Length: 305
Ligand code: NCD
Image 1 (cartoon, protein in one colour):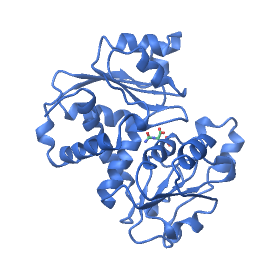
Image 2 (cartoon, helix red, strand yellow):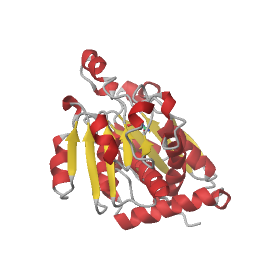
Image 3 (tube, rainbow, N blue to C red):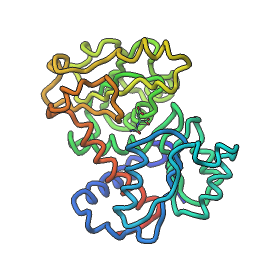
């Protein structure tokens, strides 16, 4: 039995197969409409979510399966003091696969150790978000036609943004990918990403503060919101929250084929006037999230279509 806890749980070859399957699903959805008849996914969400939870549920429904779960810690027995380990043991009796989001780093890993069904990490605190990374990789590969030979700018809250951490871990495995890390000093990537991921893999990276300085060189720009819920005090958040605002005038510095990605939700970091630019790919990205989660469910449940 396999789980997806970190983006490195799949080899590059396995990822290629998964992304191929997602593209095949996109082209032939009707072929997969009954692939998971009678199967159930449990979505165990101890933290807010719109896209991740609903795209998992849509994915299972598109495959003919069913969904059950909870969307906040308050409405689960966590509020009575139940451990994640106990919850997943019980959920293993009710469902065939589970996606879990939790505010604590490592919670999905802990759940997987007590689970008798595949566990998918749908976000663990400020740590990792591997299914957003699958979504991002599918989006990049579909729009740019490749995952190598790219200069990618990651902008915003690189300290607490788990989507950024997972995406960097995944992309260092491809050739000639260069990273431009755009953040205020206080929100730089954690040192383990710099030392154990970027340096260890001999990846070229630059850390800059001004988005304008980075924009002209980028093939992709990955914007993120400042992660309010992970700040220790509100004042720091208020000081940081509008540090970056991508608008039409800044975008004029970018290449004509530089796609803009964002895991969403957006707050102020991308002005709505950018939405109509053909390079704005963040809503398309959300659609890709459904196909890739369908592919992931089929892969972890070992369903052949
Ligand atoms: C992200 C998350 O939850 O980490 N959202 C998502 O799953 N698409 C990004 C965010 O909340 O900023």
